[in-house]
Length: 154
Image (tube, rainbow, N blue to C red):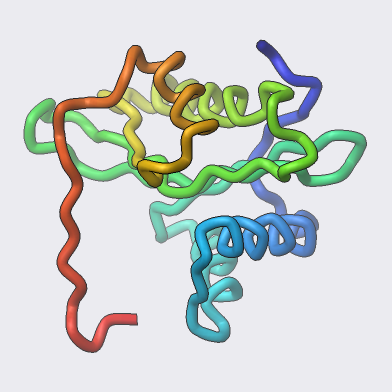
């Protein structure tokens, strides 16, 4: 399904709408980050030396979805890979194809830049999103994610 959303890089003038989506994304995942984190993330997105990129989906000039992604070296392919770290669509616009279009936009960016693949993770209980991801990818990989937090980290 192709949505009626326009997908493009997050522009400085998108800040307020992006911030509403970012805050809603954190609520969705029942997460809180340190004060000022969102402002630092926004600055990193617009810092040409930082690899984080963002795209925003808009419908009728209102931001309704966001995606953050970053390329990194890949030891197995010898090319760059792309980690799609954050994907969020406003709850009132889910089911309209916007999530799929945001992922397709990242995939297009990967093709343009010669990245080997795009990958991401989601919460195991995020069933609605997982149905979309299974449709797009053919199903999850056989790998299990582990994480070690670093003492003194943010």
